[in-house]
Image (cartoon, rainbow, N blue to C red; front, side, top):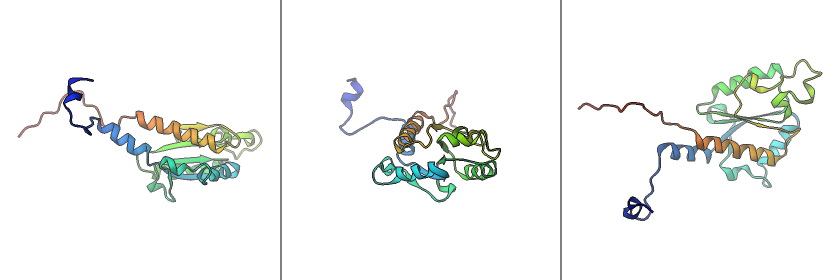
Length: 169
């Protein structure tokens, strides 16, 4: 224990603005779902009482303008990809994407025989976390969310200035 810690009154805590902002971001994730096929069914299970993603501060949103996380789950066709990109562009910064399932990650079992299936949503929008599986279990999605929260915790929000700013009065 240092001299500074000994002189502080009880209940006083030093931290950074980045830590406060990151704590807030990671404990209130508002997500937008773009789910198709069997991954969409597994995704619904994750929000049900047994797995309860609400305990992580995750709240589903119906509009991209209120969401900071997009979960893309299931088979995405070339025709749908433009809509996914438009939804992503409507989300405010900072925004994150989870790609859930083999179909969203790389086209899945349909990619070999169907010309219309997109071979990975990351060709259209940047992906932060990939969750493998066909379909992935709810536990895998929860692990992906925890991985994203760890990434959020390490981000730097405030720009570090190289030279001090001079204030003139």
